[in-house]
Amino acid sequence: MAFSPPLSIESLFALRTHGIKLGLDTIQRLLVRLNHPQLQFVTLHIGGTNGKGSTAAITASILQAAGYRVGLYTSPHLIDFRERIRVQGRWIPEDRVFALMERIQSIVPTDVTPTFFEFTTAMAFQYFAEEQVEVAVVEVGMGGRFDATNVVDPMGVVITNVGLDHEAYLGQTLADIAYEKAGIVKPHVPLIAGPMDEDAWNVVQKKVLETQSPGFHCGVDFSVLPDKTRGFHYQGLSHVFEGLSCALDGAHQWNNAGCALALLEIGMTQGLQISEEAIRTGLSSVAWEGRLETIFSDPRILLDGAHNPAAAQALARFLRDTCCGQWPRKIILGVSMMKDKDHSGFLKTLVPLAEHVLLIGMDSARGATAQMLFDEIHADSLRDVAGSVSCVSGPGEALVLARDLAGPQDRICFTGSLFLVGSIKNLVGTPESVLAQE
Image (tube, rainbow, N blue to C red; front, top):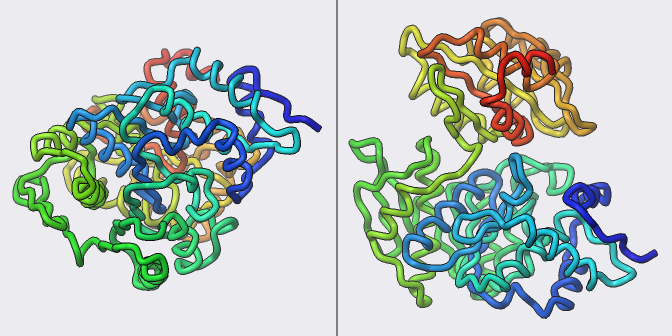
């Protein structure tokens, strides 16, 4: 049966029913018929378990500050599909989305049924080619070896870190997951690796040796150190930058910035022109939604897309540094998660920090119910170390309740899923009388 073309954003999303299909055959066939748009610009390819989106955003911001025309492809989006595909920081226009839908559906082979991610990846590369971007910063969707983005011919690649996530697709151990993520390493293409477990690094290093690719490891070949001003110093491959500051909150972003800077140093050896001024400007102006993003003050409402134990630890460090021990400030935590995530590992890190915990049911077949999360807290005896724990029906109710519980100096943090982050971001500013009726 011939491929049924998407005629609207809704029908594009309907391609999700085709599931996740690991492999490169379909995307390669699409790109052949589009005349290889992914080869019409320089590409920097960024993977990893956590921080790859932030690293991509930092890289793109610095390149723009250096005067390049930059494409940025990331996933998932928070509110609007168009967030995924940007040129010069601007979302792809809606009319271009529809034009590209028609263009791509017209070239899909009759015996091929692309997944949502395969279709949108082809769309992004075609858009970047049409917009004549000079450099595209491309975030891996999941894993690396069989990810649809792994058809690029990159100038350099990054693996930010390796942690347990997407085990059903990538494997049950850090070594298994590292093997999949190391699949983005190409022969003779330099690799930048962030901090990672020794087992994971051994796997990545083996791939580097097999492909004869230069490999540079954070903490060995370059380093990021805090300074007295709550900023950081970068001791790089050949450059040193002191007193840097990043607009993204959280000390964990310094390692992401370090990976971005090392990647750009690789680019500089291959012709990219990037000044220290551009680096400082790009770091200080970068924005990345849903990652320690403040969307309201008095009380401060914080959104963070952490959804695995390693990301929960980074979020917990930030909350301890900015909230805990600062009387009378308290934390109200709102959590929603997908069924296939490590609920226990995530919750045991964050729940003990909160005065109130709101467990939010997700309106999705893939989402965990509030009761599932409540049972996990009970099983781990976390109620003994936490404040009150409540189950709420959805993000609207959670937002109203959190605001009722919080004083002006308190912190409200919604986390556990980018779907929750997007929902809350969309709701802020909606009258509470409307939210209460949801």
